[in-house]
Image: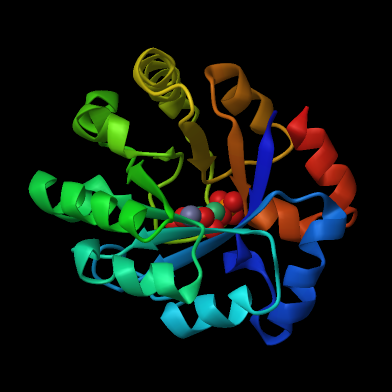
Length: 216
Ligand code: DX5
Ligand code: ZN
């Protein structure tokens, strides 16, 4: 089954509660929360208190995407704030610290996940495969919503799908960046089962119809 995770980076922050409460009737499965520190990516977005506030108003799975340097320093606090899935970037620290962070996330009872930027090859996920509940392949350079989908990431998605099927079949495979009614099918055909959609979701006049369309 294909799942949809709307990215609230494109929500109306003044009306965040309204926009989050609209996700369940629209058929969304997760809420994608983009955390940016101004170092790992050239943008600053949402932090720990906002994750905790969102936790207070929804039972949807909180899919928290950390785009921050050395995430091992913060993972426990994001888990306590209410993340259900916590994703860290493998480019953000050493292999040793990334493994420590993933183990800490799981020890908190939260699903652990890694993400790869466009220039990072599929093979880079191999040291972490058994420690992950989800792998996120970026289909844009992380940092901003509304960018164009990179179709050339699809061979990487397919390769990671084959690693998952072989070594950790319960692991989910998510794509993030430029997903819309046209590009969603390319992603699911390549092997993704979770679709993040920010601008396309929040721009859609009929959000339930949009979710239905991209689920295929
Ligand atoms: C980008 C973020 C994405 C972003 C996606 O760094 O990780 O989650 O919100 O936005 P769209 O769907 O507009 O590309
Ligand atoms: Zn994201």
